[in-house]
Amino acid sequence: MPSFNLTVSIDKAILNTQSSDKLVIARKVNGSLNTVFDGYSIAASSDWKKLLSTTEFKWTENFKVFLVSSVNPGDPIIASTNEVEISPNYLTTYDKNQLSNPENQAAGTFAKPGSFGIAQVPMELYAAVKKSTAGGAWSTIYVDRDSHVGKTKITLQPQNEYLLMWKNEVSTETIWVLAETDGQMVVFANGETTKMIRYGYAKPDAPTPDEEPTWY
Image (cartoon, rainbow, N blue to C red; front, side):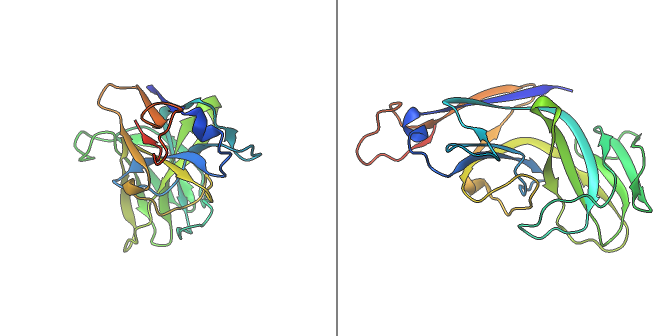
């Protein structure tokens, strides 16, 4: 599976503010953004990595799926089943609180490329996706919060669209209500695995009196 690297440069004038905000990243799945999978803190924090003038977000296209029972904003993401690794075009099936070993599906089973799924999901449970990040860790990138009638096959399509944003009260492994307007979208084109972006002022570390920092 390919590895991705997003390098973020931060003007030192921003770091010197000692703001309590965190720089966090979310990934779009099925057209939605509702979890944060990694982040850094300007101020020293025991829960977050230290934000530096050059910071890297790293991940690989390895995925796990599982089911959860609670999907309200602010809820912690807690698995109600086992977690299984899954690849595009594979399908796992729910039965008696367990997900089966995923099986490869016939061509055309999934309408969109890069998709995989969970079959026989009951009404009281909801599909969720994790992906691997730096150091072999796994982090949830999406929870399907839609209500479904009867046992349903849930299709999941991770997209190479990411949201960088500054947040104060935020955490990973928690459900949030996020929107593209909350920050800066970063899109990886087909075959692209590295990108760079900068946050700060038009002239780095030399803001004009009324200038607000932004993304470049």
